[in-house]
Length: 240
Image 1 (cartoon, one colour):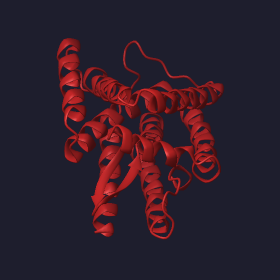
Image 2 (cartoon, one colour):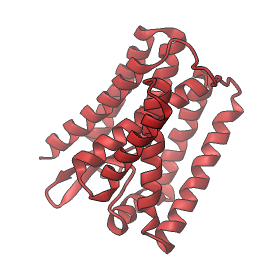
Image 3 (cartoon, one colour):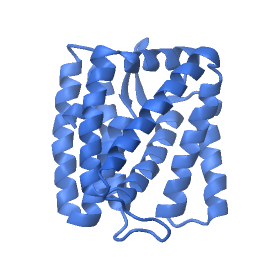
């Protein structure tokens, strides 16, 4: 059963990565621009820390608000995917993204939750991959790898957030696969940030380079999943 769960999580990661690479634009979409300012990587990390702190506060004081935040995040990600990268009309994209958000949070269902999250993460990955250069995303991944280790092994707030959000609201920004009475999970960030890098690689280095980067990241993910069998709750980004 554990092997099946690991296989499905890896399959979701591969699906999200391939979708992101295949939908990567050949040039920067109208109205967007790519930043090569390396300080932007620090800004993104600070934003992640602020959002994490706010989420922990809301989870403790207003656990029902997590559902609203999750709906908003899913809807925005799907809207970006449909409007910017699939070229749908803004009104149609808005309606469809809201529908996906509602289906994802109205009644907790792992199939709907994983599907909605996958679409949203692909949209966010594409957006980040266009917004930031390969250099910025490389620095960001290094910073996130360090943060991931600290958040899991030292402060342990990442594990706390996962368990508390699942218990209090039932909604976690992660792919979840049931294992008996428990679940196996892969955080949304473990897909969205590497996939953003793949998108940027596709735009500026070509398809072969992006697929090679994805393949090497997949090896790291497989190693992490294997090691996780012996120690629950390992950070995934360092391996990616």
